[in-house]
Image (cartoon, rainbow, N blue to C red; front, side, top):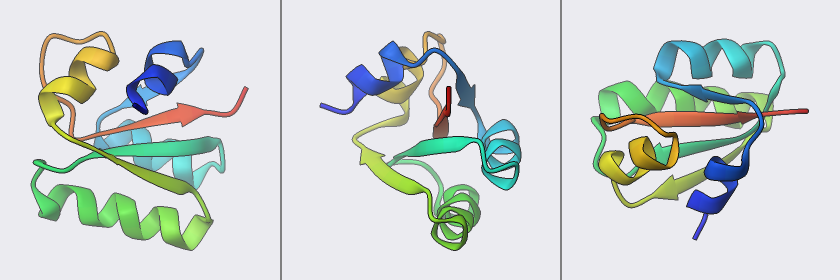
Length: 83
């Protein structure tokens, strides 16, 4: 499962604001989107990824994504930054 990539990432951005900033700066190598997150939140990030050529990987739930990111709450989106 792709959660391993999130757990092993040296640099990680969690949440729409930080993730969007990372994508805009061209520093995101892969973006993870929770399937159960609100599409109004995630669609902007997904569209930006398509525009910038960043790989989008869908994961099962916000809870699992948050856990993989090492936070107690769910995460709608997270990005792995380039080294």
